[in-house]
Image (cartoon, helix red, strand yellow):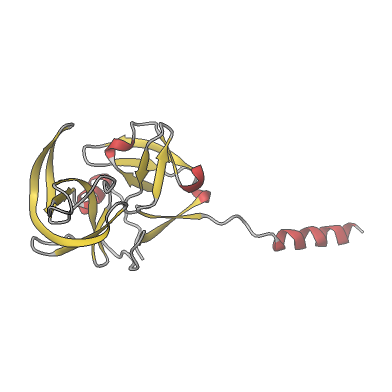
Length: 204
């Protein structure tokens, strides 16, 4: 009888699937313990890159369904870092919400090259790199080393992932004008973040 119970227990355990981890893509909506709505950036192994306006150090970040991902551990001028502490609940993907191709690297696009973005407000749009190492003054302060593009942006498009084909470029920090008047947008090059933090991009 005891042997039979052990066999049945093993059969039940085998037949019951483990809970699947939820994918995290660039552009996945996030929320914070302070009630802010944010978005995930391009995935780096073990961490998330989010907008620096999403919260201060110690703020808890949650993914779809309100499930905890982890805390903000650093806030820089152009990005913030979240450490994934609830690793079993999430799987980081080398993909972008609303884009069919897989990210394979972060080779920087030169001036004149094409860049595209997927925004929560404007959806998919493409433009060109206009200038590099641009200095922009925002209400919160002056930011250096930005790349300017002809990509337009609207409210809600902040932190949209920017890419060229399969190469991750950065995230929309802000812009000027709007899509009806032919505005522009700015981003901080992703490969500089990877170098500064010692992160590895999740690639396919």
